[in-house]
Image (cartoon, rainbow, N blue to C red; front, side, top):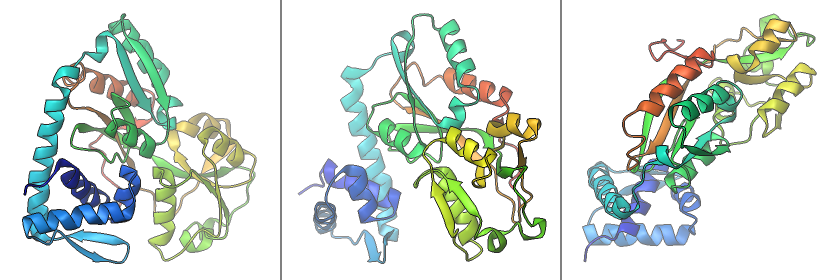
Length: 307
Protein backbone atom coordinates (compact mmCIF):
# COMPACT_ATOMS: atom_id res chain seq x y z
CA UNK A 1 0.00 0.00 0.00
CA UNK A 2 1.20 3.52 -0.83
CA UNK A 3 0.69 6.70 1.20
CA UNK A 4 -2.26 8.80 0.07
CA UNK A 5 -2.10 12.52 -0.63
CA UNK A 6 -4.51 13.08 2.25
CA UNK A 7 -2.14 11.34 4.64
CA UNK A 8 0.86 13.30 3.33
CA UNK A 9 -1.02 16.60 3.52
CA UNK A 10 -2.03 15.85 7.11
CA UNK A 11 1.56 14.93 7.98
CA UNK A 12 2.82 18.15 6.36
CA UNK A 13 0.50 20.41 8.36
CA UNK A 14 1.18 18.71 11.68
CA UNK A 15 4.91 19.21 11.07
CA UNK A 16 4.38 22.77 9.85
CA UNK A 17 2.06 23.87 12.68
CA UNK A 18 3.64 21.78 15.43
CA UNK A 19 0.62 19.87 16.69
CA UNK A 20 -2.35 17.62 15.92
CA UNK A 21 -4.88 20.15 17.29
CA UNK A 22 -3.49 22.96 15.11
CA UNK A 23 -3.52 20.77 12.00
CA UNK A 24 -7.08 19.64 12.70
CA UNK A 25 -8.24 23.25 12.94
CA UNK A 26 -6.35 24.22 9.79
CA UNK A 27 -7.74 21.31 7.74
CA UNK A 28 -11.24 21.58 9.29
CA UNK A 29 -11.08 17.97 10.46
CA UNK A 30 -11.56 16.26 13.81
CA UNK A 31 -8.49 15.29 15.80
CA UNK A 32 -9.40 11.55 15.66
CA UNK A 33 -9.35 11.82 11.85
CA UNK A 34 -5.94 13.51 11.96
CA UNK A 35 -4.58 10.90 14.38
CA UNK A 36 -5.94 8.04 12.28
CA UNK A 37 -4.31 9.36 9.11
CA UNK A 38 -0.91 9.64 10.80
CA UNK A 39 -1.23 6.17 12.33
CA UNK A 40 -2.04 4.77 8.89
CA UNK A 41 0.91 6.62 7.35
CA UNK A 42 3.29 5.35 10.04
CA UNK A 43 2.01 1.79 9.51
CA UNK A 44 2.48 2.02 5.74
CA UNK A 45 6.02 3.41 6.03
CA UNK A 46 6.98 1.36 9.06
CA UNK A 47 8.37 4.52 10.66
CA UNK A 48 7.64 6.66 13.69
CA UNK A 49 7.09 10.21 12.40
CA UNK A 50 6.31 12.12 15.62
CA UNK A 51 7.17 12.06 19.29
CA UNK A 52 3.85 12.83 20.94
CA UNK A 53 3.70 14.69 24.24
CA UNK A 54 2.15 17.78 25.79
CA UNK A 55 0.51 20.17 23.33
CA UNK A 56 3.08 19.69 20.56
CA UNK A 57 4.07 16.89 18.21
CA UNK A 58 7.84 16.82 17.70
CA UNK A 59 8.91 15.43 14.36
CA UNK A 60 11.47 12.63 14.53
CA UNK A 61 14.76 12.70 12.57
CA UNK A 62 13.41 10.17 10.05
CA UNK A 63 10.19 12.18 9.97
CA UNK A 64 12.17 15.20 8.74
CA UNK A 65 13.46 13.08 5.85
CA UNK A 66 9.90 12.01 5.01
CA UNK A 67 8.76 15.65 5.21
CA UNK A 68 11.17 16.67 2.44
CA UNK A 69 9.72 14.03 0.13
CA UNK A 70 6.14 14.79 1.17
CA UNK A 71 6.60 18.45 0.24
CA UNK A 72 7.87 17.41 -3.21
CA UNK A 73 4.89 15.10 -3.77
CA UNK A 74 2.36 17.71 -2.62
CA UNK A 75 3.94 20.33 -4.84
CA UNK A 76 3.94 17.98 -7.85
CA UNK A 77 0.31 17.07 -7.23
CA UNK A 78 -0.57 20.73 -7.03
CA UNK A 79 1.30 21.51 -10.26
CA UNK A 80 -0.64 18.80 -12.09
CA UNK A 81 -3.97 20.04 -10.71
CA UNK A 82 -3.27 23.60 -11.82
CA UNK A 83 -2.27 22.86 -15.43
CA UNK A 84 -5.81 23.36 -16.70
CA UNK A 85 -6.49 26.30 -14.38
CA UNK A 86 -3.59 28.58 -15.14
CA UNK A 87 -4.39 32.14 -16.01
CA UNK A 88 -2.68 35.48 -15.88
CA UNK A 89 -4.27 37.51 -13.07
CA UNK A 90 -2.58 40.67 -14.37
CA UNK A 91 -4.91 40.56 -17.39
CA UNK A 92 -8.11 39.85 -15.53
CA UNK A 93 -9.02 39.55 -11.85
CA UNK A 94 -6.30 39.88 -9.21
CA UNK A 95 -7.38 38.71 -5.77
CA UNK A 96 -5.17 40.82 -3.52
CA UNK A 97 -5.00 40.52 0.25
CA UNK A 98 -3.37 42.96 2.67
CA UNK A 99 -3.18 43.39 6.41
CA UNK A 100 -4.46 46.53 8.12
CA UNK A 101 -1.02 48.12 8.53
CA UNK A 102 -0.54 47.98 4.76
CA UNK A 103 -4.06 49.29 4.16
CA UNK A 104 -3.33 52.28 6.40
CA UNK A 105 0.00 53.03 4.73
CA UNK A 106 0.81 52.56 1.05
CA UNK A 107 -2.02 50.42 -0.28
CA UNK A 108 -3.82 53.23 -2.12
CA UNK A 109 -0.58 54.19 -3.90
CA UNK A 110 0.06 50.53 -4.76
CA UNK A 111 -3.42 50.15 -6.28
CA UNK A 112 -2.85 53.30 -8.33
CA UNK A 113 0.42 51.98 -9.74
CA UNK A 114 -1.15 48.63 -10.54
CA UNK A 115 -3.99 50.23 -12.46
CA UNK A 116 -1.56 52.49 -14.34
CA UNK A 117 0.69 49.59 -15.38
CA UNK A 118 -2.12 47.06 -15.98
CA UNK A 119 -5.15 49.05 -17.23
CA UNK A 120 -7.22 45.91 -17.86
CA UNK A 121 -6.69 44.64 -14.33
CA UNK A 122 -9.63 44.17 -11.98
CA UNK A 123 -8.82 43.93 -8.29
CA UNK A 124 -10.73 42.07 -5.60
CA UNK A 125 -9.35 43.45 -2.33
CA UNK A 126 -9.37 41.63 1.02
CA UNK A 127 -8.22 43.37 4.22
CA UNK A 128 -7.67 40.91 7.05
CA UNK A 129 -5.18 39.72 9.64
CA UNK A 130 -2.15 37.75 8.49
CA UNK A 131 -3.37 34.38 9.79
CA UNK A 132 -6.56 34.64 7.75
CA UNK A 133 -4.73 35.89 4.67
CA UNK A 134 -2.40 32.88 4.86
CA UNK A 135 -5.36 30.53 5.17
CA UNK A 136 -7.05 32.09 2.13
CA UNK A 137 -3.87 31.87 0.07
CA UNK A 138 -3.43 28.23 1.03
CA UNK A 139 -7.03 27.60 -0.05
CA UNK A 140 -6.43 29.55 -3.31
CA UNK A 141 -9.03 32.14 -2.37
CA UNK A 142 -6.37 34.83 -2.96
CA UNK A 143 -3.66 35.20 -5.60
CA UNK A 144 -1.28 37.34 -3.55
CA UNK A 145 -1.11 38.91 -0.08
CA UNK A 146 1.01 41.40 1.86
CA UNK A 147 1.40 40.25 5.44
CA UNK A 148 3.68 39.30 8.32
CA UNK A 149 4.41 35.78 9.63
CA UNK A 150 2.88 33.75 6.78
CA UNK A 151 2.12 30.06 7.37
CA UNK A 152 2.20 28.76 3.83
CA UNK A 153 1.49 25.55 1.96
CA UNK A 154 4.02 24.26 -0.62
CA UNK A 155 2.12 25.95 -3.48
CA UNK A 156 2.62 29.42 -1.93
CA UNK A 157 5.83 31.44 -2.35
CA UNK A 158 6.88 33.80 0.48
CA UNK A 159 9.21 36.71 -0.39
CA UNK A 160 10.57 38.87 2.44
CA UNK A 161 10.34 42.55 1.45
CA UNK A 162 11.44 44.44 4.58
CA UNK A 163 11.01 45.08 8.28
CA UNK A 164 8.31 47.06 10.08
CA UNK A 165 9.37 49.06 13.13
CA UNK A 166 7.12 48.32 16.11
CA UNK A 167 6.75 50.51 19.19
CA UNK A 168 4.92 50.62 22.48
CA UNK A 169 2.79 53.78 22.33
CA UNK A 170 0.70 55.76 24.80
CA UNK A 171 -1.27 58.97 24.92
CA UNK A 172 0.84 61.97 25.84
CA UNK A 173 -1.72 62.58 28.59
CA UNK A 174 -1.05 59.18 30.15
CA UNK A 175 1.31 59.47 33.13
CA UNK A 176 3.74 56.56 33.37
CA UNK A 177 6.70 55.73 35.56
CA UNK A 178 9.58 56.09 33.09
CA UNK A 179 11.75 53.86 35.30
CA UNK A 180 9.24 51.01 35.08
CA UNK A 181 8.88 50.61 31.32
CA UNK A 182 9.73 46.91 31.37
CA UNK A 183 7.55 43.76 31.51
CA UNK A 184 7.34 43.65 35.32
CA UNK A 185 6.49 47.34 35.59
CA UNK A 186 3.98 47.33 32.73
CA UNK A 187 2.17 44.05 33.47
CA UNK A 188 -0.61 45.78 35.43
CA UNK A 189 -1.15 48.60 32.89
CA UNK A 190 -4.19 48.53 30.57
CA UNK A 191 -3.03 47.11 27.24
CA UNK A 192 -5.02 46.75 24.03
CA UNK A 193 -4.00 44.26 21.33
CA UNK A 194 -5.46 42.58 18.29
CA UNK A 195 -6.91 39.09 18.84
CA UNK A 196 -4.82 35.92 18.75
CA UNK A 197 -3.26 34.60 16.56
CA UNK A 198 -2.39 37.98 15.03
CA UNK A 199 1.25 38.99 14.92
CA UNK A 200 0.80 42.02 17.17
CA UNK A 201 -0.92 39.91 19.81
CA UNK A 202 1.93 37.39 19.63
CA UNK A 203 4.51 40.18 19.96
CA UNK A 204 2.81 41.56 23.07
CA UNK A 205 2.46 38.18 24.76
CA UNK A 206 6.00 37.05 23.92
CA UNK A 207 7.45 40.36 25.19
CA UNK A 208 5.85 39.83 28.60
CA UNK A 209 6.35 36.05 28.76
CA UNK A 210 10.04 36.21 27.86
CA UNK A 211 10.50 38.03 31.17
CA UNK A 212 8.21 35.65 33.07
CA UNK A 213 5.14 37.92 33.21
CA UNK A 214 1.60 38.06 31.84
CA UNK A 215 -0.33 41.24 30.97
CA UNK A 216 -2.91 41.51 33.75
CA UNK A 217 -5.24 44.05 32.09
CA UNK A 218 -5.37 43.00 28.43
CA UNK A 219 -8.23 44.12 26.16
CA UNK A 220 -8.76 42.80 22.63
CA UNK A 221 -9.76 44.87 19.59
CA UNK A 222 -9.92 43.62 16.00
CA UNK A 223 -9.51 47.09 14.46
CA UNK A 224 -6.18 48.90 14.38
CA UNK A 225 -7.99 52.19 13.75
CA UNK A 226 -9.99 51.70 16.94
CA UNK A 227 -6.84 50.66 18.84
CA UNK A 228 -5.25 53.99 17.92
CA UNK A 229 -8.35 55.86 19.13
CA UNK A 230 -8.23 53.97 22.43
CA UNK A 231 -4.57 54.90 22.87
CA UNK A 232 -5.20 58.57 21.99
CA UNK A 233 -8.05 58.68 24.51
CA UNK A 234 -5.75 57.30 27.20
CA UNK A 235 -7.73 54.08 27.70
CA UNK A 236 -4.75 51.80 27.03
CA UNK A 237 -1.22 51.46 25.73
CA UNK A 238 -0.45 49.29 22.72
CA UNK A 239 2.16 47.87 20.38
CA UNK A 240 1.67 49.32 16.90
CA UNK A 241 3.72 49.84 13.74
CA UNK A 242 5.46 53.17 14.25
CA UNK A 243 4.62 54.36 10.72
CA UNK A 244 0.88 53.79 11.28
CA UNK A 245 0.82 56.29 14.16
CA UNK A 246 3.40 58.67 12.68
CA UNK A 247 0.83 61.46 12.22
CA UNK A 248 -0.36 61.15 15.81
CA UNK A 249 3.23 61.17 17.09
CA UNK A 250 4.10 64.27 15.06
CA UNK A 251 0.94 66.04 16.25
CA UNK A 252 1.87 65.34 19.86
CA UNK A 253 -1.14 63.25 20.90
CA UNK A 254 0.74 59.93 21.03
CA UNK A 255 4.26 59.20 22.19
CA UNK A 256 6.49 56.16 21.89
CA UNK A 257 7.71 54.46 25.05
CA UNK A 258 11.38 53.59 25.59
CA UNK A 259 10.85 50.09 26.89
CA UNK A 260 13.39 47.48 27.96
CA UNK A 261 13.91 45.15 26.26
CA UNK A 262 13.17 46.95 22.97
CA UNK A 263 10.88 45.41 20.37
CA UNK A 264 12.50 43.77 17.37
CA UNK A 265 11.37 44.92 13.90
CA UNK A 266 8.74 42.69 12.29
CA UNK A 267 9.47 40.87 9.03
CA UNK A 268 7.07 41.62 6.16
CA UNK A 269 6.33 39.40 3.16
CA UNK A 270 4.59 39.27 -0.16
CA UNK A 271 3.16 35.77 -0.56
CA UNK A 272 1.65 34.51 -3.82
CA UNK A 273 0.47 31.37 -5.59
CA UNK A 274 3.43 29.61 -7.19
CA UNK A 275 1.56 28.70 -10.38
CA UNK A 276 0.43 32.20 -11.32
CA UNK A 277 2.53 33.29 -14.34
CA UNK A 278 1.61 36.94 -13.88
CA UNK A 279 3.15 36.98 -10.39
CA UNK A 280 6.21 34.76 -10.80
CA UNK A 281 8.33 37.47 -12.49
CA UNK A 282 8.42 39.46 -9.25
CA UNK A 283 7.11 42.73 -10.71
CA UNK A 284 4.31 43.07 -8.20
CA UNK A 285 6.61 42.06 -5.33
CA UNK A 286 9.07 44.77 -6.32
CA UNK A 287 6.28 47.32 -6.69
CA UNK A 288 4.89 46.51 -3.23
CA UNK A 289 8.35 46.78 -1.66
CA UNK A 290 9.02 50.17 -3.26
CA UNK A 291 5.63 51.63 -2.37
CA UNK A 292 5.70 50.47 1.25
CA UNK A 293 9.26 51.69 1.76
CA UNK A 294 8.31 55.09 0.33
CA UNK A 295 5.27 55.20 2.63
CA UNK A 296 7.58 54.78 5.62
CA UNK A 297 6.01 51.48 6.73
CA UNK A 298 8.90 49.27 5.58
CA UNK A 299 12.53 49.45 6.62
CA UNK A 300 15.22 47.79 4.45
CA UNK A 301 15.94 44.10 4.98
CA UNK A 302 19.55 44.98 5.83
CA UNK A 303 18.41 46.63 9.09
CA UNK A 304 19.97 44.73 12.02
CA UNK A 305 17.64 43.38 14.68
CA UNK A 306 17.80 44.88 18.17
CA UNK A 307 19.90 42.85 20.62
